[in-house]
Image 1 (cartoon, rainbow, N blue to C red):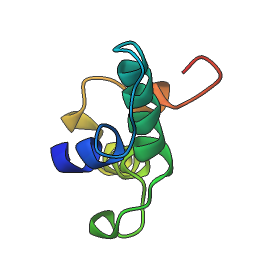
Image 2: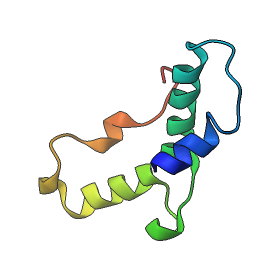
Image 3: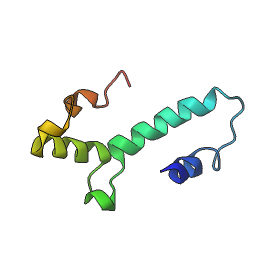
Length: 74
């Protein structure tokens, strides 16, 4: 995951100032978790895989992952 993040940010873009990197990281991680479908998760996004695991085994979780969904405030 570290290599994926590095290749998607600092190796691909030049940032004019330090404040641009944290915003880009936030955007990248949100897109990755809520939109990127992964082969290792059988075509699910990381968020979908977590919600499926919560449905199958809710006792493994402290809180409901549905409350972490992306929305207008992300």
